[in-house]
Length: 153
Image (cartoon, rainbow, N blue to C red; front, side):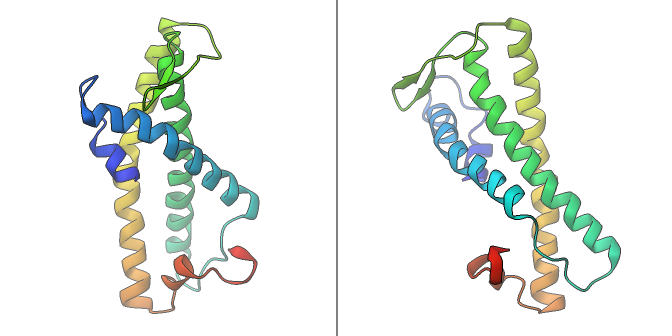
């Protein structure tokens, strides 16, 4: 879903890509924020037995992805609201809880764009790490995505 939202972020207002990006992002944002909250609440899984550098990089990528998700979602909700407009979710308008501010809107546009583009290098590093665990280490780390270990981590 995150990749689909990334590839539709340049859609023209009113286009299918734009409607999907805004409306789909607003709905997916609820699940993504829950996921960030859940990971913060339960903590990160225990680090695998590997070089310290890999564990440090894994933590940076992991928390970087969670931070980028949170920032993109929150700034995405704020984009129309900082203009004093409703957030249109497939034709249902969610009214702005804040007042219009052009300076805040400009900041939210920049924050949304930068955090969204941080996904690309973080995702590449995440996939490379997963491939390392699957191909080189073969310790079943990929299976934890399907069936978490005890304690949900």
